[in-house]
Image (cartoon, rainbow, N blue to C red; front, side):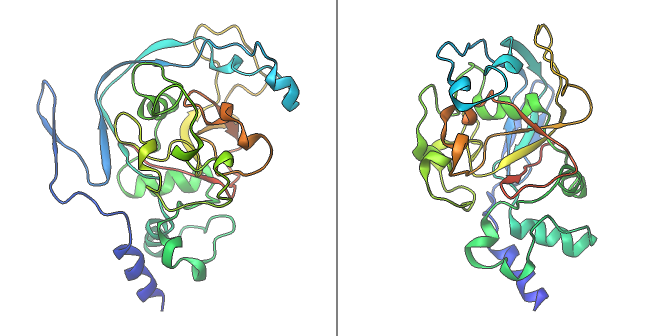
Length: 270
């Protein structure tokens, strides 16, 4: 039965482009790995200089004003890298568990991995499980800077598609679907590089510790090597997840790397 399930999972994974594209650099033609997109080398605008002038954070009951840990907006140069077009799915993760015997994610139920569920992002994974999966494929988790560039492009836009929040371009609390959706369900919300679902669906682990940005005058007791940054927002459906602020490409959140949540997943980079 398990063998049949794994075969079904493999068959229903997102379809990779059959023709392997080549990305041209000054040095050579580089083959783009299947299921990934290329983010070319160069500068991009990271972070935000916004201020919470309307004190929306206070209305929400937040402990600090919004945007402080995103400041200052700055130009960051990154080398060329690849990143998965989609979040890692239950079907893909099932193959990993079968091959490695790694510990199962929080809330994982193999019997439920069928039909539409196969193409939904895996959730409940902690940072170590996500990191292990990426390394198994010869990849790694993206850094916080890589994730943000892949999501917003180079021009400092608020969302992958531009400036205005549109709840129909991602599985956010405002979309009110009330559950995780199969990857690629919102192609109109793709980033300038073709990366999908960086707004909503599931939060995504990065490889970065929650640290103060260079040049920032904001200090937090949470900075250091205690919490890992996650990005993108989850499907939510209640409370603050309905607010557009938490789905911005520059928004930072952080959690204990040993903890998995039912709306947190990941994608890999290389």
